[in-house]
Image: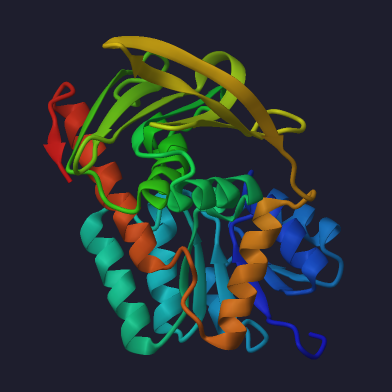
Length: 330
């Protein structure tokens, strides 16, 4: 491992793990990869020349070159692997969700605190330059009072067998909405249905009620004819649209709204502006932040507590889904 590099072991070389592996390898931090699937290990060895590929997670923890662990396994294994890594004295990056149970996430947060280890959760959109700029607009008051936020995350596949669409897609939107509004919702209401597999929801619609007036709506589906990843923020002065599928001009600000004149509502439509950003891969920015936190020992922006907040909302949404859409306190 070259001087100045952080040796990171990657647990999980599947669909998303390959993206982590590619970035970590290009950054020079990938020390070893672990996956029980022989085919995944062969592909990893071919892609990451000179990087050790092993089957057992415990062997990854025993590797002296591995100073930190990146967990990109199926969500059901996140808690177990992160717990073992923290117990072994490793800093840990965990893909979303941090865990599947609130108690498990709380245990991980406490373990990281007690052992003085870095614990970071992969809420990648919080490292997207357009989302960071949108956060600036919200915080500055440029959009005015936030009335509501809605998010659509739709696609045809990738259908999961281990988790429903809520747990697969919605963490992205929940993390961004919590970032923008700066607080937890008071209650969540989620409805949906399963069409492809028994008891695994393919489509869900969620309403989040925040203190005061703000509301947020999240529509997620892997049973949709086209891909859409769009977030709309409606303020009292201006409106913003983040379209992550757009090739360019992903963030637009609309200087329009409703004004009252002589007791009548009048539509105000003026300028529309498109904001452009340098070409940066949010995942690369996220992993660079993790590496910096490992070096400096500063808490990550998306630390364990951040992941726990998202999980609390997800848990309320799941309980509401099981109760037929009844509002559940967060």
